[in-house]
Length: 214
Image (tube, rainbow, N blue to C red; front, side, top):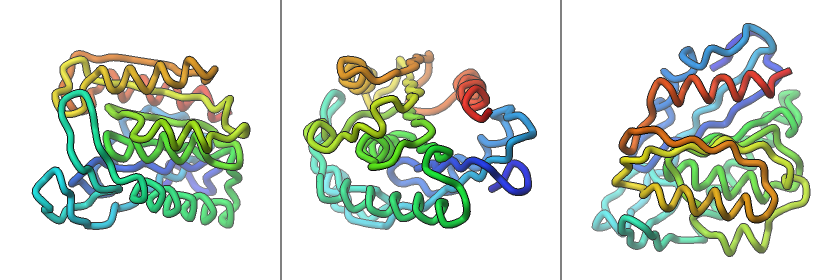
């Protein structure tokens, strides 16, 4: 989806567990982006895999979740790495289409946000920014080991619902604190909502993006 002909920036936006790439398409017109420069939005679909915490039910998922409660997750790290590889291929495709890494944003909601966190913080070339919505850092050890100097200065917009009963706000705050303690610049927002998005949040994302599309 392109906001104008000949886009100069790209946003790769990852959906949550059990959803698909169409989930966030309706958000784009609500962002209030400036008419120029053009932005290409890419909404990939996660593969359908068995998800252990859901009784092995096959659904779209970026990685397997072994178990969860309100404040923790046990996840399949190999699945995270596989999804990171898939997103790196999408980044490379945008490079081939004329969009350099420094004009590519990664965005994600919930499980998609977990992959966006991991991919952006460990990417070997500097990216334009990271949008992490109602999500968490799935494997801080992996990020600690593989975080790249290229993205130490990546701008981060992170937001969470204070009434989220799927991904507890404490998990979102823990990811924020992990980044802040390591010197990342994080714009943090909380909204009185459950595990979802709201119009105020969408407006804030649009404002944040507009500030970085110059």
